[in-house]
Amino acid sequence: MALTPMAVCGGALRMKRRPDMPCQTVTVRTGAPFDLQLSVAGADSFFPIQRSTKALETAIDVNGTSAVITVRQPRAHSSIHASASPNIDRLLLRRLTKWLVSSDLDLGPFYRLVSRHPIMGPVASSLEGLKPLRPATLFEMAIIAITEQQLSLAAAFHIRGRLVRRFGKLIGTVWLFPLPDELARVSLRALTSCGLSRRKAEYIRELAARLEEGSLDLDALIRQSDSEIREQLLALRGFGEWSVQYILARGFGRPDVLPSEDVGLRRVIGHYVSQGRMLSPRQMEQALATFKPFRGLAATILLCTGGYVARNDRRLRQVFADGGPAGESQATDRGWWRRSGSPPRCDRRCLCTYCRIADGNG
View 1 (cartoon, rainbow, N blue to C red):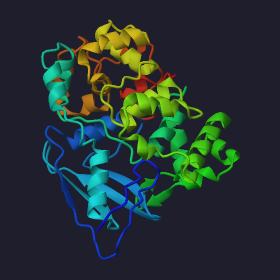
View 2: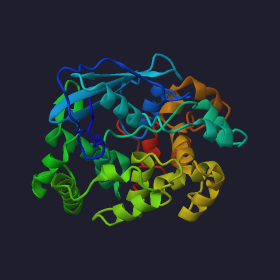
View 3: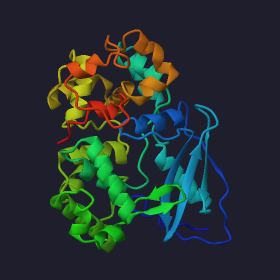
């Protein structure tokens, strides 16, 4: 069966389906090392949530039909298995699964690059197989970036939760993110009632309207260079340098893109390389220059070390028991958080990464 291009980034997945082609479980080789459970835990460490890491579940829309993709890994560094309920085409399922788990990212060269580094080497070794996971669509990623502008991660997380519950769709136990056609026609008042500022509500509705009318195709940007994507995103209302860097790194999966304007990131990297002092954007770029072309990936892994993953993954327990890569046990010394001037913890009262970087982003 000939497939149309999959609009992974438009908020829905579009392709021609035939009812006589049921979907079986598909096996995807991601290239070792890859640890799905560790990667899910790492993704969750940024937000005040706690879910099972045994599987990755994501709701999608295929030609108006909603489905839930479930991705499992029998053991770390093995192939992953994905299924959909209800069934969708095997090729679509395989392609979407590869997108979600960043299967195009080969961690081998990164590990070789950092293996002898006194800080990054032990951290990367302890978190072997951790990859940044992608949202199902670039439209969702763009909305994530808008909601997190100048806000703490916790506040943005709760605003998105209200947005999804009001305009999305519950599929079993998984919420489908609102589609562009839905958000394009809602009133600004309805959007602001979710906690958005009026300006952010305008940004979201305009972006959704452009995608719905076809004047913008985020999917077409996937094969373009970082500079080309940056130029086109900056032309959109509501997207500044920080938002573009964030979308490039997390949405497009560009491992060298470093959100150097991110206040929280500069603080966390400063803890490791500058005795706890927050770095300037230029200082952070210089500090991570040795990890090029994986500066963004290195920053992401460092963000994960002091939070949920560090406290719950046995591979990091000894690292932090010995004082941590930076010489101080973040996982056990609660005084560190007070001395660093960090904001109040989330409602789980844990030491998740979000608790350290809740000052907001530029």
